[in-house]
Image (cartoon, rainbow, N blue to C red):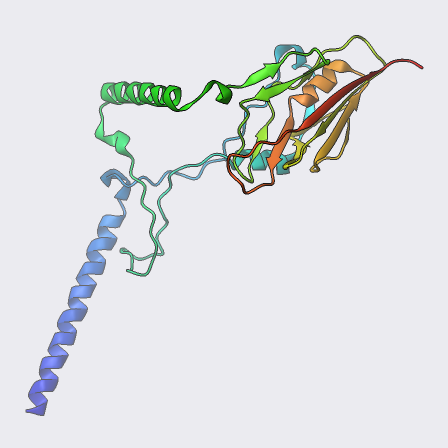
Length: 248
């Protein structure tokens, strides 16, 4: 009687082992062409850096990238990437898996183009419904003589952006200087322009000065702002001033 029970248990264990082995082999065999079944596993690529191309009038002015700051700007981008496997053909119940599906494979070339245009139109209509005039970027003219954004500049909590619209329009002077201050974040530059002196990088107050107006304006195009606040829907009333120092 005991021998019969042992034989039955051994047979059941053997059957279970064979079933698990077949399941593993089946999943391993079909895990190789996973991309063709709709699971998107894109190749690793370089992070998408922001456009730092200067205006044509400043194209002749070189600058040196600050990799650390540019890296913060690149982190604002996101992508859908599936979790990498651990060498198994299947995921265990306690393993967290992230799946990304490439739905573009379900469309033909013409259908994909039409769907992309339609989705873009839907998004634009949605933006028009939810946005208010206060969300649009408004640049103050260079009457003070600093040009700067009045409203519409949005930065996510603990993220970094390039500040748009900064420019100094002043008559010929010996030295040009711009002072920037913030209460909820810090200033920095994505690149350093030769001939421009910087003071206060990575701090709430940043001073930029140069004897050449074009170089200073090129440097202003590379100014970044980093949010240091966790609070949503808050506004930083930053201060700014410009000085043009003549010959004494």
